[in-house]
Length: 86
Image: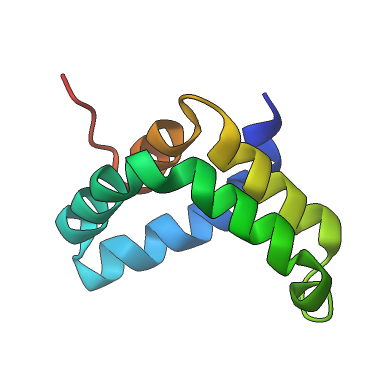
């Protein structure tokens, strides 16, 4: 799965989320953002030329593709917070 290409970044973010104790907040925000994930992906594509000055373009594309995947944001939410809907 291509999502694994962003795993290193996600691991850093998860550690920071755990340190700050904001896993519940992050979980709620990602659940709320779920319907807008495809729009977020398009915004990343639009902003890619400017963001490319600060971040490699292929990294931006990976994040956009993750948001485009039907279960991409859910996968990210589980990776960051460990929460599942079960």
